[in-house]
Amino acid sequence: MTFLSNSGYYLDLFIESKDGETADDIYVCNKLTNFTELEKSMDLGFSFRKDEYYNFKPTSKYLIIKKEYNALLSEITTINTPVKVDELKNLYYNNFNYLSETINDFSPFECFNYNLYNDAYSLASKVERVFEITQVQEQAIESLVDYHNCSTERERLIWFFKNQENLYGSIYFEFSDNWKTDSIIFYEQEEVELKLDITGYEYVIDYFLILDNLYDELIEKYKPIPVHFEGSKNGSIECSLENYLRLHNKYIDVVKKYGRKEY
Image 1 (cartoon, rainbow, N blue to C red):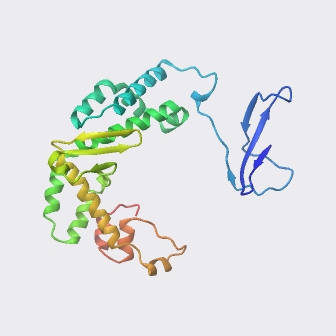
Image 2 (tube, helix red, strand yellow):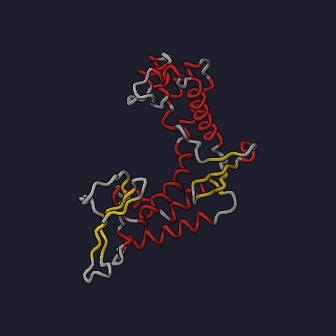
Image 3 (spheres, rainbow, N blue to C red):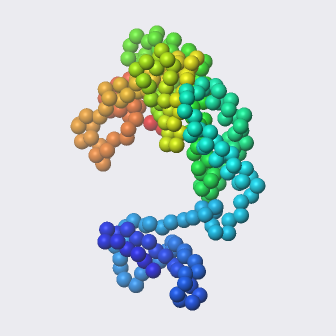
């Protein structure tokens, strides 16, 4: 049968029943031929993950991951005082290393097939995102020196492209007006809300902020103007700094040499 709304949303189902009264099973139909022509525009078909089945039997690995996931979630959501980045990193890898290694070895399909694995991967990724601060120390020092030696926009643009892999490093962080003096910042990603003591890593955050702010400045300065949209085949323009610079015929040689090749 087809369930269809006036706006075209539809759901094609096959309901299996042995007695004609009680539903023994329900399937989503991938290809259902209706007796009359219907205006079906948006498929609302659904699927279930393996750990949603009523007869699901968890493996020992599943149970270990579930235990560590619940423990990590409890640990992260009960931290109220500022926690040093290194202390958080040590706590995480000492107590939840199995969770991290196992989840990160899963393929995207394995994570998608189980609610638990999907939730655990998401939580682990959000926590590990914090540790990126500790992974770019040497690059941050060298890049900050190089940036302060830049005297022209062209030089800053080249600097940006050389450091573009760390773009959005400051995303998910919030800063108070005096974060540079008290070294306290806030990290928020859904259920993960942490007050971080970044003592010793202030310059890394500085590096992230300079990179992100420079990108915003260049994107704003070279954003498309009406004539660019008028010249576009479909009225839209792909959003990338490389593309914006080409539209304005600016720094073409820099874009070719340092820009991302897909753009």
